[in-house]
Length: 517
Image 1 (tube, rainbow, N blue to C red):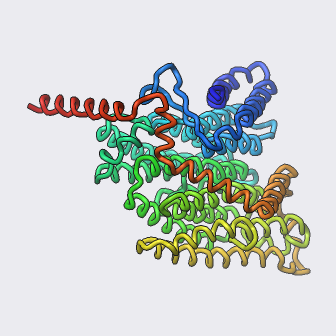
Image 2: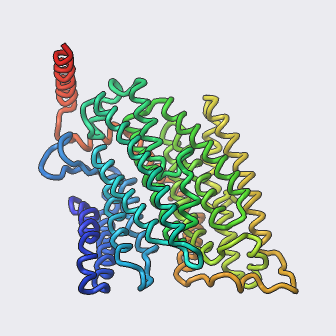
Image 3: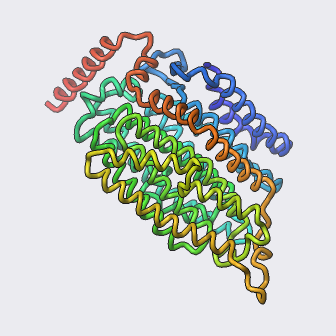
């Protein structure tokens, strides 16, 4: 199990070695990156299933927790650790004219994303989050959609994304600093042990709010999601698919870890519900007004991420299960939609009659948006049903408002998606040039990805009960704070550890008092 650290180390080494190797052979550099991704997948698959019942934790560098670097592997972290190299491989830029720096940035993204989901302390989470941010800023800056003035648009979008992301990083750092001043440790298991006494107060809730907004920049959380349509409209659809499908979910996973382990207060859950419902309604309203396919999908992504936050705000394991269902569904469907949208650039009205020229692509698009909308018996229906039923069962008023917002947003979503379908299947006017001829041809790889997602959706429909059991098991393991603590501190006496922490905190307070005198 310790060899899983290689999924962080190997891509990180490749990120720095590939530009050097490219001076001799660019082909060798690209092959090295691909080889690292395949090796990472093999390493994760080799330990797949070992954490179904008991999570695993190990310290790096010989220092036992709470000191040193701790990696924590459970069903959730292992699933996303596998999703990272798989999705990077799917959206790998196969174009030979692509500069080697893009491949290097993708390796940096893979390493930082893997470290983010596996880390067991706030310090390393922050470090990997910053590396992930640097990689994403760089990728936005070097990419652009062909056929447009993409270079300037991508640079401008990258600059605005950088500014907003930097503000978010500062807020996240301030929140972490507050936690450290209150508790005196950054190890998640140690914090979870001490949080009920140290963080169940105004300072703790303030720290959570700061981290929520800071990490929420990547998670497309209201109100720090204004970068989404601009960035997704300026970069290639492959990068848009990777960012919307994967990167946003990694940020959500960080928030869920902190929520479960450090801030299981009703106030923290309600804050997430409020920001989530605002994201849902604003995203869907602007998507309804959008006249361009990419912008529509971008704002739709904001609405879907808001729905994810609403789901995770529901107390207990059932909220985690609903959140995982919506997040994983969005991780699959939204990238596939971006792949199809890559061949349908420009105003929506130009897509009139496209279904006649490309019936398979249009049918594939309709299937994906039906699942996104929640049409039974597709997987999106069961995910939304979980949210609606459990919001209705909550007694707090904020959840009643959240239920109303979700239902209204679903109606709005249905309205603009139905409008798109009507345009696709509209009979083209005989005196006009076929609209499809003015569209880019869909690449075979893009269609393959979208088709594979459609097949997965059908398989999930046929295997809905096993999927439900898997999501339930994942939610129970993720939501078990004591299991997390016991796994990390399996060889230590928790009572002694807690008393030692209190003694150290008391000494620090005494020194501060003496210094003030």
